[in-house]
Image (tube, rainbow, N blue to C red; front, side, top):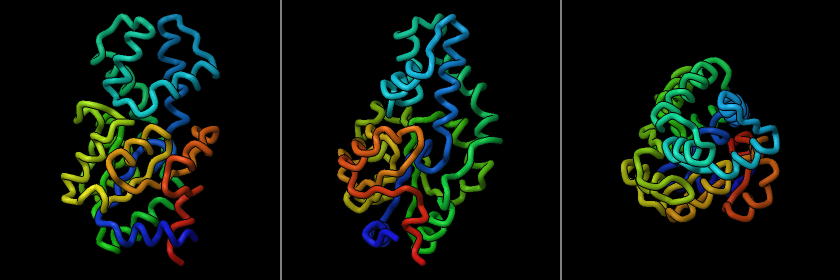
Length: 227
């Protein structure tokens, strides 16, 4: 049990979570979608190419990512069509296949019992996030769910975290953030918040970088559930 993080969570006014890879186990899905989508245009990405691509687009908003794909791979569709294609490819997976990270629900229950305000700050699209949260039955835990398309700059800029903290009526220094990738950790720190990095298979190769950037690190939420 990591007493330092439990104490930080108990003392803060609000806790803000990233979504994919932090609260839900979904990063496996996006690498495969990227490979399949680009294959429609005769572009062979491969496993290593997919890894490099995921690093390149890390933290980007859904719209920023669509722009990146259009410009980098010369996709002959506008960004709204690209985003719609991704939504069609992913929404049923979010409803049926994506699960909560281990012990995440227990930690959410602990935070609500403590009376904490809870928010989500995600780079994903609204339809997929809503579908997943409704399927998992976690929507009622959160006071504000924000997507990066609501702000002018995605992660690693702090905009989305500042937006959520403002709408939760919590000062940045009174917020604790949970994130799974370096760009998100940097965004939380730039917002003036404490950040706990979360282990995820997708970012396992970034473990030491994540530890160096964040205030805390956990393998899963069982480490921060009081016994």
